[in-house]
Image (tube, rainbow, N blue to C red; front, side):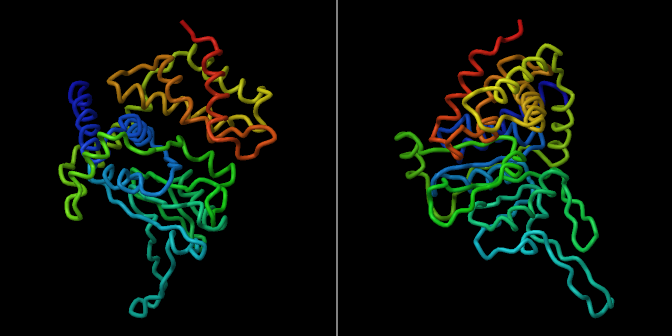
Length: 313
């Protein structure tokens, strides 16, 4: 895929998503960047703002298979991974894959599921495969989990453990649309045309090619030092009880590469790192004396770090 064709495809994908997700270009861009980096997305927001619609539209725009899992307190790990079923004709057990076997999986209200079921996602998200009764099964490629969670103060939620939060590359919030966008949504909505105007822009093969290209985007040695300086500040800051892990540092590099690719460049610049910093780092740190933090407080502390760490010239 040549550079002009690549740039056109990416712009077409943004336009396709924008047909449904009105007035949220940053949300669209971040979701596309996560897909290109082979990463997973966590959406934390109130119900009814378009979280499910975003995941479904992304799948339709890329012709990827899509499955939705509604997390509830009685959902079992086998309900999402799959189970062996005895085949009488063959006289043996045959594995029946669960809804996790799709290119894009929407884990809806993930924090309403029990910790045991939440943890069933860990191997899948990290390794791209699952293990059942000692047998390993590869998940489709590309593979992306888009999980939604309700704010912690909502009833019936189980906070995600730190090790699972760390496996999401970015955390975003869609938020309420502006007045003009919401009026447009209302005027265009009907039960039968939610995805009208959404067309296939990329194939699964092209997505895999873009993920490969993303990994080859050049990152200067000075930018690696810049990333490490930011990460070190989160660990040494008096604001935080928990800083960013090495996995988070790697994610900051790989997602910055995908951001550069999404803008038609084969090299990273400091702004790639700086602009993706908040959605990538905020869910990986915890304020001291306030385990889940005050809304926006972690972002504010991280923004101070991003503003104060010297940018390489």
